Length: 640
Image (cartoon, rainbow, N blue to C red; front, side, top):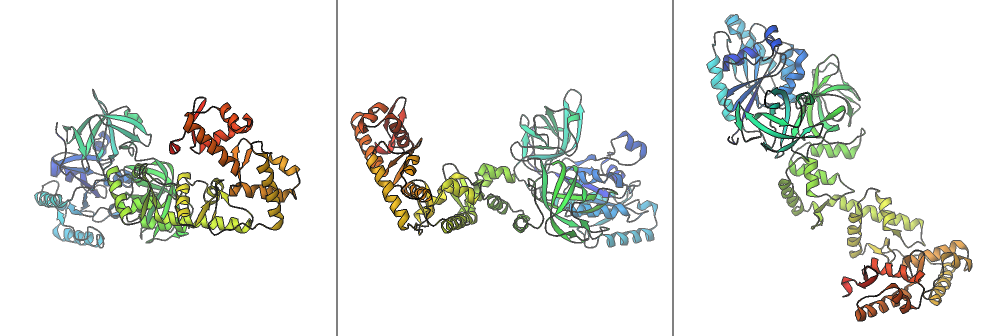
C-alpha cells in the first residue's frame, strides 16, 4: 500500500434532464455512470454516479430532473470544477438555469460548457443554441468558459473536450486543507466479506487505516479498516481525494447520505447555523421571517426555518445575515457553501456561506451579533480565532477549546494566538494553564467592575464595599472567578480598586461616610471585643447591649468586619484584629521552637476554650500560616 500525497481533482456535471450528461461521461471514459437498475430501465439518472476520468480525477454525474435536485446539490458540493451540459436539440431549459444558480451559490469558480447532440441539429441551429447559452451565462463564472460542441454518438468533439479538460485539470489548485479530517458521505453500501463501506470526497485533513473517527451527527465512534482510492488500496487518504472507506462499528442501515466522518473532538452537530443568505433575483417573492426551507449543506438536505437577523423581509437580489433553526442537527464548517430551496413546490431560491456552524439561539436585530457575523464572514483563520475570544466574555479560553470551536489544528491555533498576543489584541492570563482573554473584553470587564462599585457606593455611602462573589454576580453571573480575581489584583496594583482584609472590594478613592452616631457605636463595640480577648461576644450579644438603634449597630458591626477591625474566623467566632495578630505571633513562635502543635496545646497557649481556638486554627490554615497534618499543625511554606 502507498500513501496518497498528490492532488486529486473532482469534476461534476450539471444541466437539464436528458441533455446527455451520462452519455457524455461514457463517451469520455468508456464507463456508464448510471449504476442503478432503475436508471438503466428508465434511461434517466436518479442518483449520483461516479466514474474515474484518470488516476487522479473523478467525475461525479448528477441527476438533471427537478425531482432529484437534492442529489445534484449533494454531488456538486464537493467538486473542483464543472462540465456544464446543454443539448443542441433543446437549448437552455429550466434546470439549466437552476443548476447554474446552484453552482454559483456553492462557490464553483470555473468549468467547461459542452453542447451535446450536435449530430442531431444543423449548423445554423447549433449556432443559435451557442448564442443562447452565451446569453444565459452572462455575468456568471462560466461567462468566459470554453464552449465545446460534441456528439456522444459519433464522438466528434470528444478529443477536443478531453484536451480542454486536461488543461483545466492542470490549472486547478488542490483544495485548501484546514487540517482536521472531514468527509461528507454521499454513498454507503456493503461489500461481502468486508462489511460497511462509505464513500465521499475528503474536504479537509487526512486519515489512516486503524484511525478512530466519529460518525456524525450520531457521534458514534467507528474505526477505519480499509481505504480505497480509484479501486486501489491505500494506507491513507487526504484532502481533495474521493475515497471509499471500510468501517468497523456501524452498519450500512445506520448511515445516511449527509452523515459526516470526522476527526473526534472538533465538529459538533448543531440545530442552529448562523449564515449569510443571498436571495436570488429570480426568486418569485420576498423571503419572510421564519419561512420553512430545505437547506442543502454538504451532502445533506435538512428542513429548517430561517430567522432574519438584520431585516424584516429579504427581497430578491438582497443579502442578509440569518440563523437557520433546523429540525435535525447539521454538521458543517465555517465557510461551507449551502443552497436553500422552498419547501413546496421545490425551487432553488438562494444560498450563501455558513459563518457559525455551532451557533446558539439568536434573536433578530441584535447589533452586537450582526457586527460579529460581518467580521466572521471574512473567514480568515486569524479573524475567526480573535472573534472566538471576543465572543467569550465570561471565560478565558485555552488553545484546545478554541481549536474545538473553530475546527482548526491545535498547532495552528497556538501560532495564531502568538500573533494576536504580539499585536496586543489578546492577553495571557495564566501561562501555566494557558488561559487567553481578549483585550477588548478585559477593558469592558474593568469598566463594568468600576461602574458596579460606583453604583454600590452611591447607594450605600456607609458601606465599605462588595464581596468578590457579590461583585461577580452583579457584573456577570457566568463570569469566571479566576478571571475576576486576576483583574482585581491588577486593578488594585493600579490603585483603581482596594481589597479589604475581609475580602471586600471598593473603589480606591472611596471613603466611607462615618457620622457621629455610627462612630460612637463603632468605638463602643470595639471596646467590648478588645476587653473580651479570646472569649468574644456573639452578634446577638452586641445587639442586646443597645449601643444605639439596631440598624446603626448592624452598620457599625459590618463596617468593622469590612475594614478588618474585626476578623471573622468562621463558625460564628469574631475576634478583634489585635487579638488575631497576637495569636498568630504566639503560634509562629511556638511552631518555630516545637515544629508542630495540637489544638489542646494552642488552647493552653491562648488560655481560651476549644470553641474559639479551633475556628481560629482553621482560619490560619486557610491563610497558609499553618498546614494541617493529621491531628497536628505545622508551619506553612511561606513562614518556614
